[in-house]
Length: 478
Image 1 (cartoon, one colour):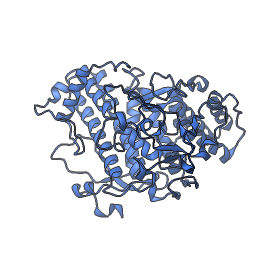
Image 2 (tube, rainbow, N blue to C red; image 1 turned 120 degrees about the vertical axis):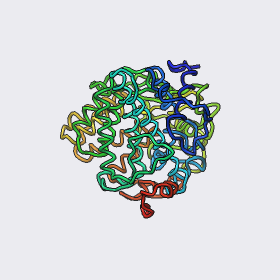
Image 3 (cartoon, rainbow, N blue to C red; image 1 turned 60 degrees about the vertical axis):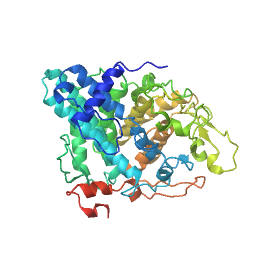
């Protein structure tokens, strides 16, 4: 069994109790509540209890909530993953996301993604305010607040991705309330802000956090400077307004030497252990603190392990054909011999073990962000070299690209799909930000095309939020 992170379980339990006392709880949370409460003076009284509070927030990233498809950050990511063309979902969990039928204001996807993201933002606001009002030394305050701002920025970014049109299409869309103070029982909902205003907060939070964070942390499930820089690089892919900063942020994460950054120990071993030096940020899991069958993607894509729970996800044969025979990522097999076209291929990229870690950020993604940024900066030779650093590591038969213009950008985006499939919804993410359609070929179980800039690229605002918040107009979903 894997070793638990450096905080013992007693400290983590203290923090979970503290969370219920100093921050608001959403109605979908079913965790036991402590009726005695813990005061802010206790929670934010010294470094160790604040660290325990942060451990609990990060534990919520992978918490079990209501159902398999509404279970922490990985379920938000997998819902995006399954909306594309590369993966195919059987009639199991995430089938409504797969069919693009899960965006109405009372549906589970809409309600969960909104509630979960805003709950995490409120946890971050509670951390920031509690530390600001504490008597901790100034250096500790700066670093703890920076962690809070990174978490807040990360989840506001998820909300922009899920609930707003493409940023470059309509940054003035006003759909998301901004909260920078902890909620209380007497709080009134804020009016909506534009996507530009939300992204401005995200960039400000990350810029300030990067200045105050260090490289040090307790483990890869925690936040350090590199994590904040990696989130900023992703944000800049969406805003497309500072490719130079996107490049420098990504390089700060992977170290600037692409060839030494991309080697991974995860391919062929189940993508399950954050000790892989190529992983930057991950959600830790063991059999004691496991999310069990809630843990997408492994619980859905793994058809071979014992136990393998849902065996629900298949791989489009046309996507399989984009991999060369010598590519180590070509982990696709026809295990069923089925006459049903969509069931031809499964992947062994992810193994379900009850203790697999979940990747959130990897160095290879950052190398590809750098390559994309260099393309937009007009440095196509540098982009070729970065792309080849990854391709040649994954495939000994790879040949350096000679593509230019749009063909080079398309090759970079394809490489992102090949490297990151199943992890964070990269195909959907890239189609939305580049205003591209998602065109499903005839191998799919559900045939649906998503036109560029379609409303299917974002979710409606939950009806319960509209009903509870007098500052949101009833017509917002029209």
